[in-house]
Image 1 (cartoon, one colour):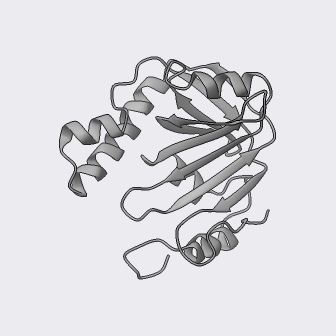
Image 2 (spheres, one colour):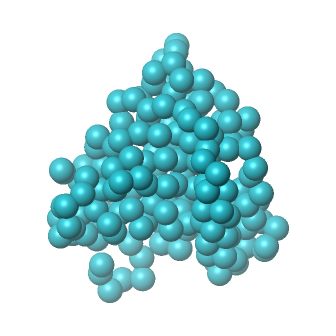
Image 3 (cartoon, helix red, strand yellow):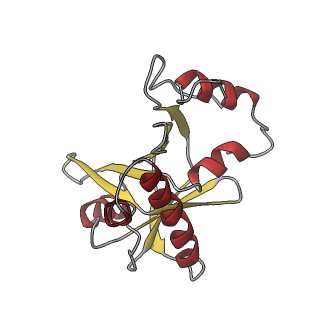
Length: 178
């Protein structure tokens, strides 16, 4: 990473290029996805209209399958779109420097959350809330923004087919090639 106090698309491109390619998703990206970042999800309804949603945490299985944990009640339109076969886009952003990575897949599925997901959601939402407090949020604001007390969970699961840097700055939106 650069010596600047903020992330840049160039940082993402360099990290991607230099990453260990033993796995479909490099370890540095998996750590980022599971490190207390926000997850904004996008899909398309059966009529072609865009729908969005928010995940509360992310887990990566076998360095290839992304599992975004979310509330089905709060994301009903998104869950419906994915259930009906929509492609998905998931953008993960870090609060302190706005580093953002977007993953896209032509299909995904909705599954029940696993028993050990609850403790991982607690860990990741605590990381995000603490980072927001460092940035000046109150505890109440940070906990609400991080969805700290979400209890109804499902997992949106997909294998990313394309990866993009969405970190603000010159080069944002560039695809990170396989």
